[in-house]
Image 1: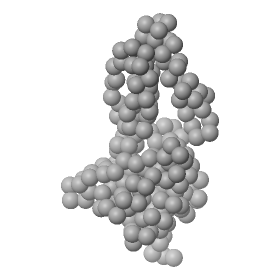
Image 2: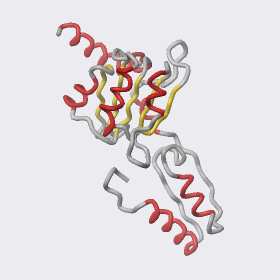
Image 3: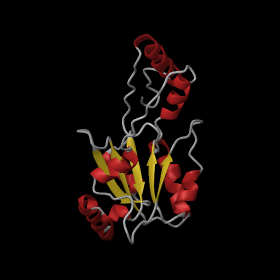
Image 4: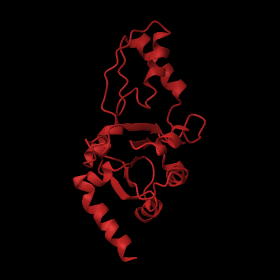
Length: 198
């Protein structure tokens, strides 16, 4: 599913699972990432079980950790970040999650999924916490052949997004761990040298 482009609604998906399980005896619902991290897997399980259908969940590796890791970003690192927030950027009522404001107050790494449409609001919250120099990475279509990466700071990332034409689907990573990434270190150092020469 993509924003505004769903082949099936969630209710239709739930019903397809039940109809096919009752007709064929088994259904495999394959999802990217982990089905219980912003994947609506629990809704599908609850719906199937309400019809007496036995379910088994096989956990996956969430893009929350996999996509940053593919860029050399360890979302926790001893002496740099001892914890992380995983937040949806857009809630079910299409608003920015109130947790983003709380995350902006912490020293933890912040990983935001489904947040590109709310990026100016997200950046504003971090700027209000005087975190303009905090490193940011945005990874669009992570781990695919269409992957694009933009790196900057809270104060510069909107320019980077515009220059690199970054859009959804993308993962936003805010935190000192971005600076620590070996793969991204060159991008970040190049960005800083451009900032110094301005």
